[in-house]
Length: 132
Image (cartoon, rainbow, N blue to C red):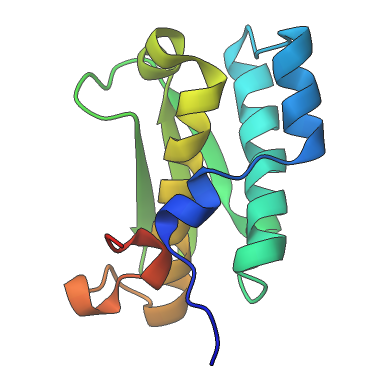
């Protein structure tokens, strides 16, 4: 019987690179560095958990205006473009270790859009994002 992964299985994992970076405290200090780190993290997570998601096609941006969310995944149905916007203020408040969970969460929404071409109902949520 196959083991079904939960969202916490992914959020509790860190790559060796991430663990090393945490120890040396090289958290991103600029929006550009945050986007670079988020892209790399998303690529690693997608390769392991969403192999059919072309992570390299996801657009990334930083929002300096958003106040109520740490991140949002946007989908344009006319072009099928997926963009993940990360909130700089939330990153500054929580740091990379906690904020990386936001990147993984938004990646699940990107997978949903890529898979069903629209934000799905609760029954379309990836098993990784369901409560255990």
